[in-house]
Image 1 (cartoon, rainbow, N blue to C red):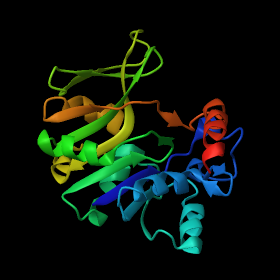
Image 2 (cartoon, helix red, strand yellow):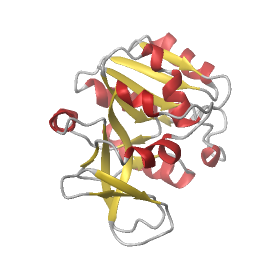
Image 3 (cartoon, rainbow, N blue to C red):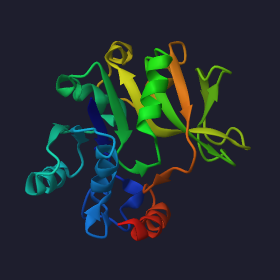
Length: 230
């Protein structure tokens, strides 16, 4: 099964502490964040990785061409395409009918075997990993039916209280490409997922927290959490 990792963003908020490299190559000891993410996927048998790169893409290519492990394919963008445009740009490289998509700047504990069984049992077009947080006012939240089907989304700042948020990990079917907009650059989160609530899209709740390195504070927190496991 193909794994598509979205790692083309500029990481503007992280640049005060990481200005010389893309955030996917943020250092964690002798490894990069992207190395850690891929290693966690290899534990479940994933072997083919497609990296959607943009900002400082030469550094990511150089990193993997030098190490050679694991072998990866590159879907490179010359101008920013957004998460949705980056996924569509990678379509020629995706061969498996079901494929996994992840954000390249976040990590959470997932039983991918259970997640995949859930996706197949639901006959879903898209299955989205979810994490539960106590206060969702700083995040857009995901609304679910009793069966786990995604019925809608709320924008961040519209409500507080506990709820589910998108963990940035998805199983998708190739049919999803027929539902993407024709625009050159677009966001999966803002321009695609809201419309997909009308299709067979399901949320898969996870235990545990979401770790992301999108801001200096979160980056430092992630370093503190991961340093004992490297």
